[in-house]
Image (cartoon, rainbow, N blue to C red):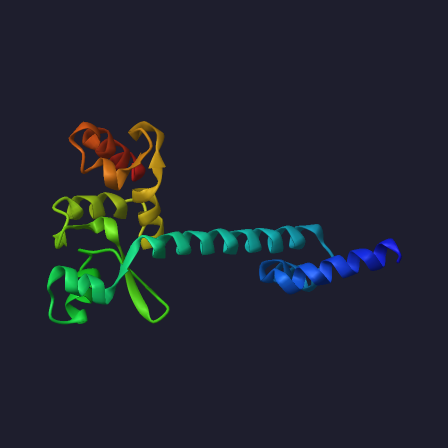
Length: 170
């Protein structure tokens, strides 16, 4: 078997068992062959889509759907939860057939007491709930590996966490 035939067989086998690889091959086949700048844009878009997908996946893993938030807060209707979101009192994003709310916004069966101040500081930097969630949940070296959301709940790290959060929008 020629080296080219062997390579084609290996690519076909991998594409059959790895949907992400197959999608990448499709993108490459659809990409223009010239000029070089267009190829760079295709690659950048593909990388950006991949990163955004990973961020969304992480967001959903740390979020609660509307019905759980409704039960948690004791609201009679999902509309009451959505009203909090529309008024900017709660972060959430519609995805699929549901709206998802980052779990760090809650303390027990209520909104965390410092949420209004947190949302105000986050709004200085972004209006994107996924980005805001990332800021709140990413582990920080300055907080001994804790996230801002976690560190704000601890007396020992709260001051530093507030400083970091304040600096985000500055």
